[in-house]
Length: 248
Image (tube, rainbow, N blue to C red):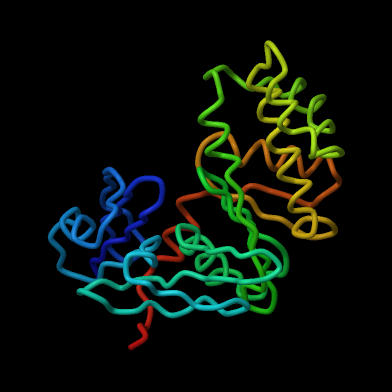
């Protein structure tokens, strides 16, 4: 069966699919309206499954919850997002595809999935449900403040404990003269781990996403004795976007 997978994240990504085989890939700027999204889609002869557009159709399910079934709107199979009010208000939209993908492949996974990117989502999963989430803007801050240099692994590891043990010093750490990208990454990720301790302490953690952030998170978590490993990004997204029964 031919179908199209669509991820509306930091940008629009499209995969032309035949079953589980990728026939083609394309990228486009992120559409900010329903009309722009519909106009950006290619001609289709099969289902179009879209993640990351819950905000455009106001499709949300409260946590805790199993991943909701896709909803048919304007001819598209839309993955609803997830919202929580406590302990901290949060909304999961762009990370729905990999969360759905992991639970499709490993429905009994008990641990945390981290979807790293411009917006990083920590999703706690148990018994086939998402129990709670925590989102951060570490990726966006790093992109805004980085110089574009390489992140030295030894310098990163040496600098990590500073904000992990004292996250209240983050603003001061960012102001250190001559700070390089290794120290920037360590400061931001250290503060992130401090803010998400309940999501990784004593838990199995899988990390996915684009760019350097997933590997840095795995290194930082492993240094804390956490069982953490990276998972191929595209594999999870496509597993989560695979056509399945839709809701009314």
